[in-house]
Figure: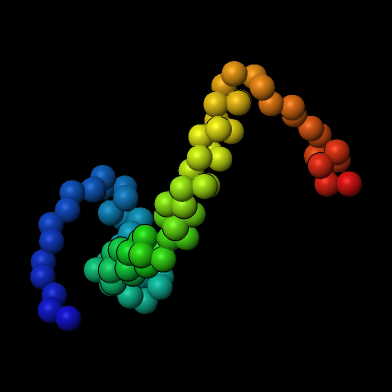
Length: 84
């Protein structure tokens, strides 16, 4: 993969932290950002919540539940009542 340069502006204390972190991990600041961004990308691409939220039945159920909570038409139970 071809690399390109990017310029970002951060608070000085955050820059110091990233530099120190990279040094203790025996890597570069660039690699820290690369790994962080790749993790975000993987989470986004494999995000199961997108699939769940895209399900029309789940969305309808969620909206109905939110409406019931707003109107007070919900019976609340204690932890012990639910998980006995």
